[in-house]
Amino acid sequence: MKNGYKQYTMREKNKPSARQDNKEGERPEDGGFTAITPFDDKVCLQHCYTSKPYTAQHSLRKLEAEDLAAERRKQFVVEQVMIDQLSRAVISDPEQNVIMSFPNNAEQDLTSAPLRFRKRTLHETKIKTSSTLTENMLSNKLRFDARILCRNGRDACRELIGFFFTHDKSITIYEYRQFGKNRTNALPFIQKGIYLHKCGRRRGKPYEIEDFYPGADLTFLTAEHQSLSESLRQNPILIIRITVIDEEALNSLRAICKGNKWDLGNPWNDEENIRLALQEAMKEKLKKREVRTLTGLAKYFRQLDISGSGCLGKAEFKQALQMYHLDISEKIFESFWLILNENNQGRVDYRTFIRALVGEMNEYRKSFVRKAFMKLDPNKTGAVSMVDIRKFYCAKKHPQVLAGSSSEEEIKSAFLETLENACSNPQQVSYSEFEDYYEGLSIGIMSDEDFINILRNSWGI
Figure (tube, rainbow, N blue to C red):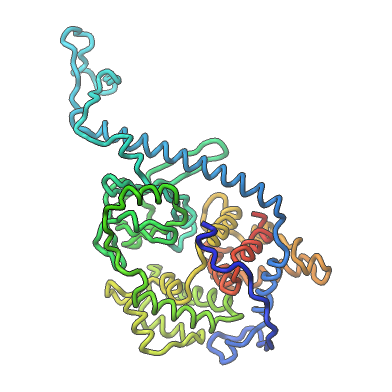
């Protein structure tokens, strides 16, 4: 996964540039918003962590232990899925509901007994069923890890493991849950079934093997899954992002299905080109003020979203772009809006808008952001108090602290001040706000390793 996402092997050297200080409390709409402020200087302190790599030996030990634990979790879910699907194939067969009676032994005929006294043993179950599902069929499956794209931290941090079965092109997704140290469980999150794309250029078409790759989105109608949480059912579409995929199984299944012709179209179409061109232009505008702009934009959108639906209209997005000096021509904005507003509802989720406008960090980086947040929020409440943030944030390994030019408290206070600026409630940080902060920080860091060193040195993950 790391090799698949890595785009650069070396970080750009910092180029000297003149910085102008703004007055404290300057509003985004003021003309000096594009200048570098003391806020941006404090954010740049986090970049210094990249010059001190995490201890290689300690990192290797932790990664090996985490990989082993992750493999055990996946194996546990695989076994649970096989048991569930094979058991359901037998138990759901209507013929199994016929009660077997034994005319030669009156004592064993319990057809008139209360239900709680009836006991059907393996010998009374018909082995031959009308279902043709076998363990061999279920073995031709593609396993993948996934996460939910949503603003609710509790749902966004769910650990999902999904499966695509090639024999009938069905999908099922399980949630791995751990209760305490010794008790674990794997619960169905998306029931096994054949599903169709709900969004995008393949809307209305069933999922194929080529639809599964890291970064791909699977879309489902929340109305079809009554077991989803109330927060997820507020939106008609549930979007699940594939983060890791079993490459060995994928290559094997592709070889088996090589006779099939996939009608997937050209992935690099005009829509993709428009997005990429716009993202490059936005990154240039955001240079040196990425965190301040992205966290401010997200905070502004949350304030406009009075209904809590997560969606806003065209006029509100235009106003926000002008306020944060991210102006684009009317023609480009209209083309961009047509891409996002594919359902012609006139409203778009603002998280989707931000991702399409400036792009987003890859799944390898996001996995470490989630890991850091889950360390702060082990109970998965979706929010962390500033008290806990201060307690867990480590500034001991910061180069300025090691050099003696700054104290731990100064570095910690600078970080907390910039993080608080992203939060609606200064007393706590939600997952989306935590992610927004590191999303902005990620734009200015070219190397994956440098970005991950920041998280490791700060949070000890």
